Structure formats: C-alpha cells, structure tokens
Length: 365
Ligand SMILES: O=C(O)/C=C/C(=O)CC(=O)CC(=O)O
Ligand SMILES: [Ca+2]
Ligand SMILES: [Mg+2]
Image (cartoon, rainbow, N blue to C red; front, side):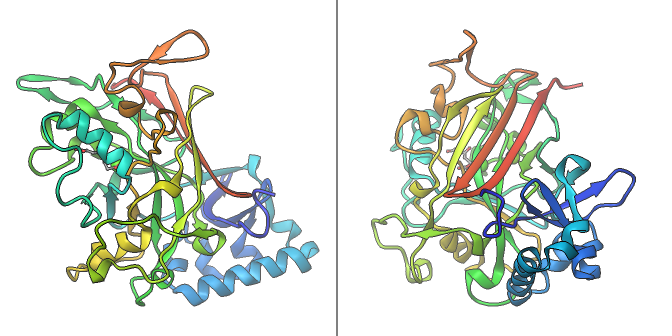
C-alpha cells in the first residue's frame, strides 16, 4: 500500500474555516496529529517547530504514530480526516533554498546546449557538487498556478519567456542544524519542480549563475517523506575519487522512480538512482566552509535525467532546446510550455509514494 504504515509522510492541512495544522498521510486520509497526540507543536501550521526538536523526536513520534494506527485504531479513527475534506498547504517555512546540479546526464546535456564550443562538463564538475542559492520566498506548494515570467531575453529584448520549462528534482529538508550525521540533520524528502525560463537564463547567467530565470517559482509537493521510510541503494561509482570531506560514510543513494506528466500524458520517467553526487555529499559540501544550517533549509538535487531520451527531467533536454518537438498523443507537438499547460511530477520508491507536485501555467497578467 503506497500510503501505509511504512510511508506516513508529514504535511500541513486545513479543513474549511479552520487554521492549518500538521498531519500525517495515511491511506486516503490525514491523521490530525495535534488531536491524536495531544501535542501543541502540531497546531502551528508548519513543520518547522516539530522538525526543530531533532531526530530522536522524529523517530519517537513516527513510532508512536505507527503504534496508534495499528493498535489504538478506534481511538485515532475520529482524527483521520478524509483527504477530500482538506486543503493542503506549504508543509514548512523554507529557510534557505539551495539547488544542486547532481545528474551527470543532465549537466552534460545542458553543457552541450548552452556551451556548444566547450567540453560538456566543466573541469570542476567531477570534483564537487555544483550548486547555487535560489529564492526561498517563492517556493510554493503543489497546485499553485505559475505565471509566465517576463524578463530580458537578449540584448534590448524584453517580454514574456518563450522557453518556459520544468526541472524534475528531489528536495531534502533540513530538520535540525544540530548533529553531525545526515540522519541527524535531514528530516525528509519532497518533490521539486524548479520552473525555469531558458531564454532569460541563457542571457543572464554569465558569469554568476541562475538568477531571474529561476527565482519566479519553485513548486514542492505537500508531503515530506521521512528519510527513514526510503530504502537506500549503493551510490554510483565516482571518478576521480572525491576529496576526503566528500568521501561517503556508508556510501548510499536512493532508488526513486519519477514520472513527468504533461496535460495527462507521461512524457518522461527520470530515475533518481542515476544521480552522480549523493544527498550526503550535497550536505557535506554546502557546510564545508562553515556555513550554518537552519530548520527549514531546502536543498534540491538538481534536474534528474537518465541516459535514454525518454528519461530526461526537463523539456529543454526532451526537445533538445526546442529543435525536436515532442509529439503528444492528441496530435499536438510541444517544445516549451504553453499557457494552460499542467505539469505533474510523481515519484515512488518501491511501494512508497512520494505523491506529486503539480502546477498550471497561466499567462502573465
Ligand atoms: O548548465 C547550465 O548552465 C544550467 C543548468 C541548469 O539550469 C540546471 C540547474 O538549475 C540545476 C539543476 O537543476 O540541475
Ligand atoms: Ca534546478
Ligand atoms: Mg525555480
């Protein structure tokens, strides 16, 4: 069962006329944690206060919830609210937002398109997980419409982007700044769509990196899946061996299968297992200079692309910068996104569903 006792992702929900509070998804319902566990921390409308308690509290609370759902079922039954009676909200207050670039396939594809006269991978790529700081304040929950951004499209050219794109990613949520290990600091995983305006990006990014081409919106799923729920696999081989601070204790990756749907049709199936840099390495890298963490920091993996064309996690790759339009089932073709398009990214890890992140493109008002 995708939403059973081995999953139990956290989110923030409200019933009509009530203020948002924290819950856990179980089946087609949300368990109202403030009511079921008699704990004020779940009445705050964000996961941050609970996450700040630290990893022992996360583990104990999860065990308590499993226990209540499996043994005290009649006691918690009144606190299971059917999903169709709730609105789901942004699950946590995003502190800082960092976006990495950990897929070697994605980085190579983008290099070929943006820098055709260079080697596809820059010399630093195999030595560190390349990343940038994005805009935390424009991270929105799944279902929020995304307005087509305006911007500079080249010298003297201004207007709505003609190359609106998605990036299918996983996001890691920092629960507690304390502790040394990944498991002590990272609370869970969410799905990310890092919307990108490729014409704005290509013109502005030299030499400081992504700016307005990505800062207008980043969508995340309403559920944060606890790290504990996700099965691990061995990380991908790395050549050359990374520096000691990036050497991986118990080297691990995640076997998560994503799918990208455009207007109801699956257009890609990106595999997270292919990612080159691991979540552990992203966290080690972003703190190696002494930068501190805060509860609610979100760091994303970067676009997830596999080797074959039908596993690429962005339309710029799927259509090779618009030169090879995708043919859709309804006879239409698509390069970049059009107004009215809906993109939904879903993911599963074996039987565990990570839910979906969805958004419709609206015209710039
Ligand atoms: O190669 C580039 O210049 C740009 C790459 C991206 O747009 C990717 C980015 O935001 C990071 C990622 O999602 O992998
Ligand atoms: Ca990105
Ligand atoms: Mg973005």
